[in-house]
Image (cartoon, rainbow, N blue to C red; front, side, top):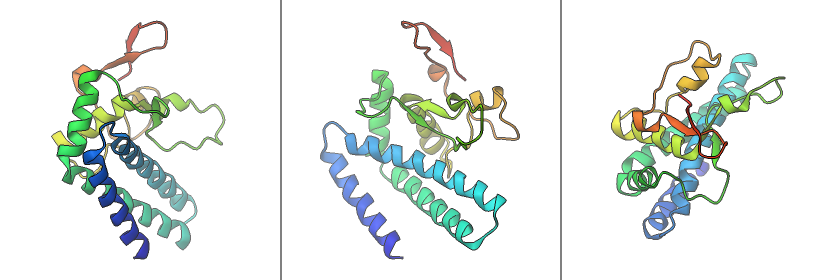
Length: 181
């Protein structure tokens, strides 16, 4: 309970700061946290399936609660989050000092021959997923897998398609564009 209370205070404080922060680094960090919580929840969900022990089930449940609370927080402040996402989409880039991509799905990196690219999205594409699922579709969670994951060998997963304007990214060869979804 103490942890939950601290998390809520942290999120509320960050929201107030995000509204006054002109470079929106806090908003970017919170959107990264949302996706990170999704991945951690998926990780412990898989661990709890393989090892049905109370400590793993408790960790899974705790992460799910944090993930869902973060979604509620983001959806409750569209003037902060949706405005920031719309600006990034209009600019065609996310002004984030960290990495340009983010792991969107949990992947067990100890497995040999893992194509990490199946599990990652550019931050801009991640923002498009957040916008479509949380703000346009009013979903209660982010989609588990992307269409790229499904086409490249993902099994028994629900499908998610980005809006048409989001269907391509630079492939790293001088502005050449190719569809990723």
